[in-house]
Image (cartoon, rainbow, N blue to C red; front, side, top):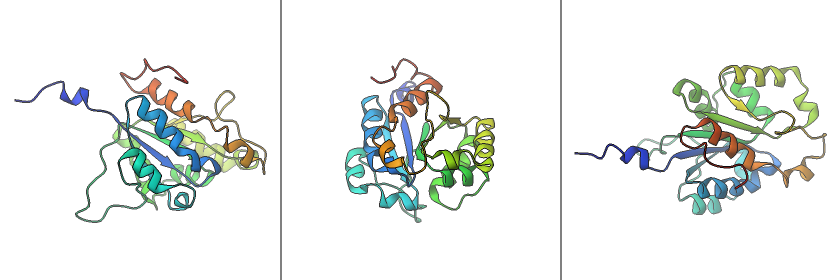
Amino acid sequence: MTDAGADDERRRVLYIIVCAAGPASDVGKLVTLARQRGWDVQIIATPSALDFIDAEALETQTGRPVRSQYRKPGEPRSPKADAIIVAPATYNTINKWAAGISDTYALGILAEAPGLGIPVVVLPFVNTALAGRTAFRRSVEDLRAEGIHILLAPGQFEPHPPGAGGKMASIFPWDLALFEVHKVIPGRSKQVHGQ
């Protein structure tokens, strides 16, 4: 006989998909915040993001391997995600995802998420020149229409001037993405922003 409440008591799994942008080197801050709030964390990096992060330190922090490629036959699967945060999300990743391109492991996960009912929160890191492009604005609209939570607005993430990304990386609002996840996941809404 199994305990009916056992599934409710397991720690929820949060995938953090990290892209190649300035704040990526600090993704451990988001891992710390998520773990403090009871999440198990699986880091998935775009191939380019591997040059921005300390994969070994993140593996120690999460207790899981950083994934950037599809697993080989016989390799263990990652646990199923209860939610996904994409941060920092780049212009490239947002546009490819909206266009249905699935040419990396990270994009494959994102392509399936809406169809599987997995909540996804996106915290972009783009400059005003990129954010103003019609293709980008259309991609954001298309993803929002599919139920993706993109934190791109006043009071959320606001694009920075071209060339100012280095200064903005240190104040990237990691907690905003986690706060949004807690708003959209049943049973997590008691969590308070910034705590």
